[in-house]
Image 1: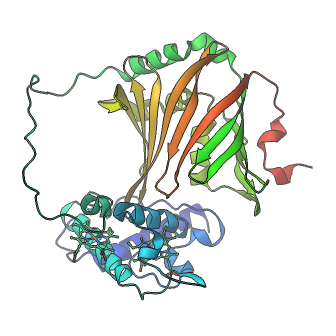
Image 2: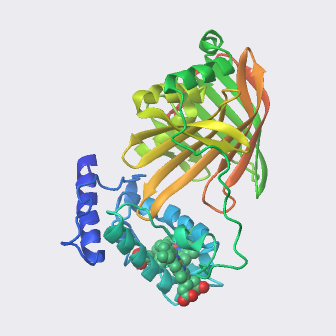
Length: 382
Ligand code: HEC
Ligand code: HEC
């Protein structure tokens, strides 16, 4: 299927979904003319709407099959439960298509309700999500607890819109904090070694980078196998136990975000799409928030320390049928290497359980020669 066909299919599916599940289609003007939900086309069957690939889909019709797991994690995370809370399991495994668990049938009604609410009252935007009511619990609270919490005292001067600095000013401050344009320009490649720790344990990681955008990251798994992914400047790939496959456009974009030697390069590349939009706090530090909307279904947020000028956090939000899915990276322990600052600890968090991993750098070498072949998919090598 061509991209265009995929998109038109998505429009049709999205429209039929809306027609089926909004109760008041004609009376309620909504954003029918929005672009279709993005296809997370990972090739093969996952290009297709999930109802064509799975056995018993009644309400998530039109969802790209490759987003099913993400959406299920989003639901599970919003209620604070595992898959088995809704899916029947026995010695043979989990029977995802079965409807025998009552909670699954309730969840289906809840998806309908949530979609109706958004359609009827919020112009089809994802304002209400499972999390809005559930807050990580299966029992949303209806009753206000007593005694009431004290009202917030607004003793500070009445808050108007904060005066925000110009985007270019914040970026220049960030560049200076990293070591300045001259020092940054001198860095052409980087070999990073370290460890990645998550709930399942610790594994060694190696990352190769070559400016402006070549990237390969490999992990040695506990069974000794290597799992790697890379971007050669044009194509993205993934390689592991199950062989090598090329990445879809969306997966590649994800990789491209990490490929830049400095996140500053990504921000510069986003150009006018990135603007300072607010002030927030990250781990007690005051930060300017730069927001970018690289496309209709993605938001990127960069939190830059207003005192040191360094990047503290990056959040990427990807829209799905049940709302935005967040991914977060926190940057910490900046140290100077060859005149530029590099974060020696990065914490990545995803909605999956065990979805948080901390990477610590143990050694870093810059401006070493790395052969281009290291960035292409392993199959392409002789
Ligand atoms: C709160 C309930 C709930 C939780 C938790 C949940 N699911 Fe689901 N799941 C559903 C519902 C409801 C459907 C059917 C959607 C529909 O009818 O469109 C579904 C469908 C599926 C399907 C498609 C089955 C088929 O063949 O039709 C798969 C696969 C799946 N879920 C996997 C998972 C995984 C993996 C997890 C854990 C990460 C999970 N689910 C957690 C409610 C849940
Ligand atoms: C407007 C508020 C609201 C939203 C939004 C909402 N829920 Fe609920 N949900 C409730 C309430 C209230 C209950 C408890 C009902 C009861 O106790 O009878 C509930 C109960 C449930 C249950 C049953 C839990 C159990 O113990 O068996 C499931 C499963 C569920 N919701 C899934 C979802 C999913 C999935 C979404 C998002 C698609 C969602 N809910 C969105 C309010 C909401």
